[in-house]
Image (cartoon, rainbow, N blue to C red):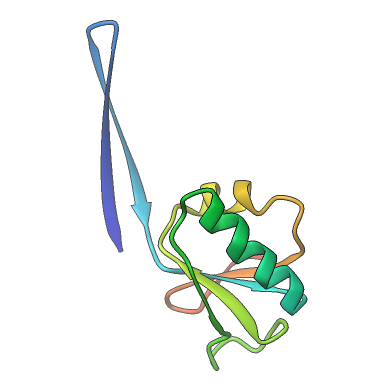
Length: 96
């Protein structure tokens, strides 16, 4: 898990935000959706790896996206695609 800090100065006030980054696996209903997701994430400048679904996860089409990007941002970028589920690095389901 990585903790990322972001400082923003606006009108002489300093605002500090933080994001907890963890490895997540996004599982899809079809190979086509997984390929579209990879393309969309890369177009939006998000790092990801298209890979076989880990054996600890028995779901999906057999392909998943592995990334350390913030979950909220990933789901925003993948809006409209058929995401089956999202798991964390301990293979616990985060989203149905």
